[in-house]
Amino acid sequence: MYSEKVMDHFINPRNVGEIENPDGVGEVGNARCGDIMKVFLKIENDVIVDVKFKTFGCGAAIATSSMSTELIKGKTIDEALAVTNKTVAESLDGLPPVKMHCSVLAEEAIKAAIEDYRKKQREK
Amino acid sequence: MGDRIYLDHAATTYTKPEVLEEMLPYFTENYGNPSSVHSFGREARKAMDLARERTARALHTDPGNIFFTGSGTEADNWAVKGAALANRKKGNHIITTSIEHHAVLHTCRYLERNGFEVTYLAVDKYGLVDAEQVRNAITDQTILISVMTANNEIGTIQPIREIGTIAKEKGILFHTDAVQAIGSVPIDVEEMNIDLLSLSAHKFYGPKGIGALYMRKGVKVQQILHGGAQERNRRAGTENLPAIVGLGKAIELAVQDIPGHNARLEALRDRLITGILSTVEHTRLNGHPERRLPGNVNFSFEFIEGEALLLSLDIKGIAGSSGSACTSGSLDPSHVLLAIGLPHEIAHGSLRLTLGENNTEEEVDYVLEVLPQVVQKLREMSPLFNQQKGGLEYV
Ligand SMILES: Cc1ncc(COP(=O)(O)O)c(C=O)c1O
Ligand code: FES
Image (cartoon, rainbow over the protein chains, first blue to last red):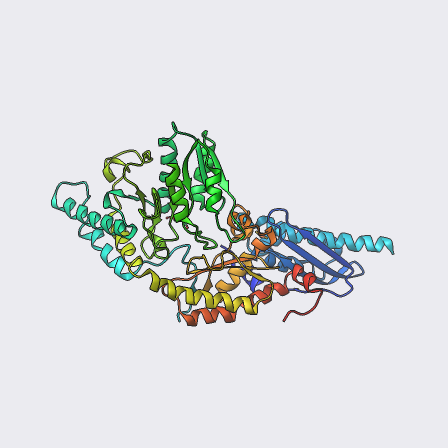
């Protein structure tokens, strides 16, 4: 049911873990089935120099977490914000329709982490 | 030990070679229609009669009370809808439980939309129905009680005999879905006061797509499939003879030595349960500790999700199933796990492993080696786990 790419990212997820003293953290829950993703960002001059994630969710949730962190690593904040769940799903050679909502989790967690970073910047 | 370990026997079993062997001639040689007058037909009829006799013997009843169906689902539909419709003049109330298989639950929901009232009894934290609760739910409108013999997800075995006694005392029809119980729970429909019983061959090493409904002589149950005069004018459609032959052989084998079968499976089951509970923290056993099917193991691992767990185990060659929302097409967690009071997150981390006759101790030991590693790996990925352990490493 999953593509080879999804299985690859599920078996060997990239960027799993946490960042100490992150510049931005985002945690979102999935209203559909109760899953949770947490994203940690290290940002220098508006460039995402490091990203880590933790996910409590299904195979598709883990694979999309992994893929989306790969897609935003080394990118500027604006470039990262342009990454949608559709981009992530396409990069994984597609997801089963019933699993599309899982990819929204990753997009939202990244947006929340960037929002957190911006809020911290404003408070500085 | 093969390269894959099948631990999903509650979903379906393989067909035993000796069952298949008896079936095969009915595809190619003895392919007659049991309703035909000629010798081909008579041979087919004879084979069907034998299968009916074997099924009746397994349930301790007469062959005349056995009706073959196209699945366990059809048997459940027939029993529940048929009994409700036939007894509508007496009342419109049905009692069942909140943990029935969807074949019964969704049939009851359908009847509710058509003027019937249904009481879905709650179960305790082990998934057990209280027989006294059944008694207390009875009204002067109650026409049917339907309680499964054993649950397909958590394996809990219900007090069917007690419920049968109450139903008989009150003169109410009693149906039990015994699909998971055949071959593990000894059944005597007379002694247990069962009026209607559903079974399905693919859960006891027979073929898929064939079931049976036992109907006590004289009970009023409407016909659901209309057409030809098959099954003594009660269930139309040319009989699936090879499958019926397979069901007959499979049920004969299944009830041959229930105590021996149970002892062997229980030893494997308990080895698996004890092994996991003693090595993996934050784990619970779902279902009843003792009153459970001999092959059923159902855990909840906190902080992780069941589909991810199934995929990881599948990569390691272990086939199981889960009641997690993420594994169900509807994205709702299993109604059974919710009914025993599990919060959504704990239902999420559920894993069902169901043993069968071919599983070995060596296979169980392989699971005991692999499963804790897989759980550990997923927990390290989980945001909940770290929060719980306050960043401490989990050993
Ligand atoms: C308890 C129970 N009832 C009914 C069924 C339906 O049986 P079948 O698959 O033959 O339709 C199943 C099996 O999925 C079951 O476990
Ligand atoms: S996270 Fe629940 S279905 Fe993917």
